[in-house]
Length: 186
Image (cartoon, rainbow, N blue to C red; front, side, top):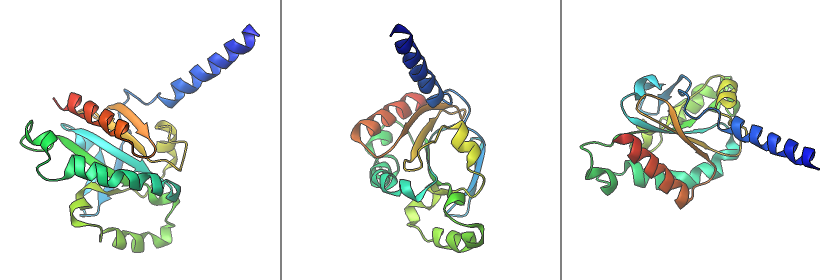
């Protein structure tokens, strides 16, 4: 009986370690193009500011991702937002929603998809970063195992992962993100 409990505890501790193994590690190099046409290399181009990245690699994550769009936009991007306006001359945050489309858009349809992608709302164009490359290394390193979930990573000013969450929006997740971002922005 003690042996079984020990094995179960060991198994769960191993699962916990592997789920969060990427925390405190540099975010892996990722290059994409915004809907505004700008090439962005993460973490290289995001250094100097805290970054909030949302990665999704499956249409199955679309419903949970959509729950974040309006709250994240209102809280982090909307002009004159009171959270940041009293503290900073400009928003101290890079915010990117990153659809990783290799798994959902075949190569022969990517150009058509990219044209439609450029037609998103003007205020979001600089914040939606299209990635069309090999997804497997990111899924492995970042432990993005559930394709039905979007994954959120907060990077410090040096590009190191300091916080991770996933799944649908909740006020408690947003509060936690806000606190982490404020802490690392100072």
